Length: 198
Image 1 (cartoon, rainbow, N blue to C red):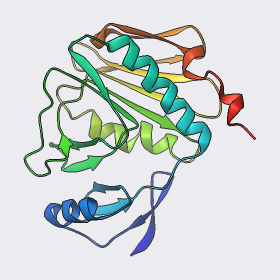
Image 2: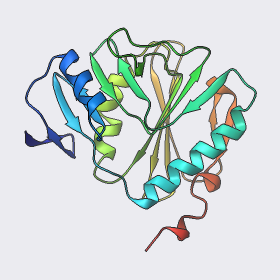
Image 3: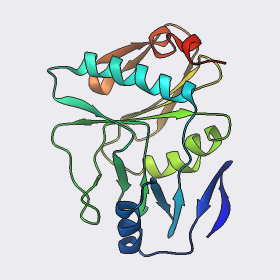
Image 4: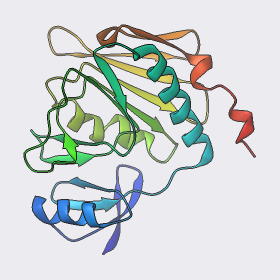
């Protein structure tokens, strides 16, 4: 095992593994492991501010989607990007209709409609770059949010009809998720963070 840098993310990395070896490792471990380019990487724990933002998003999306065909799944939900052979754990996933389970890992799904990453300064480049490249290969994915922890700022990516991704940066007001017919208040996403800030 060695330390490696993926984008600007430092994670513990194992030697090359087959998908089957990775799935067995991830299932048997108390840690969450992502899998990219044949390598498994242990994900570090998150700071209280990050976790509070994830909880705000979870509550807001849960309320907004109640009774609808789409539903949110938490950070323990693994996503397989079949086209690139990678497995990731986004902070939130939203699935519309029935989840499609990976043929290679019954704990992973392959058809999210919306993905959310809450990005710290050390992870934002990777979340918005290499990790997004994997996510963008999912045909069903319509939108992605990158929510920054240090300042109230949200990056919204939406797939256009021609396949291009349109990127919008928001620092106030609301972010509109057209694919699931939901609007989220930026203030709501960052509410009550003073409770966890030092």
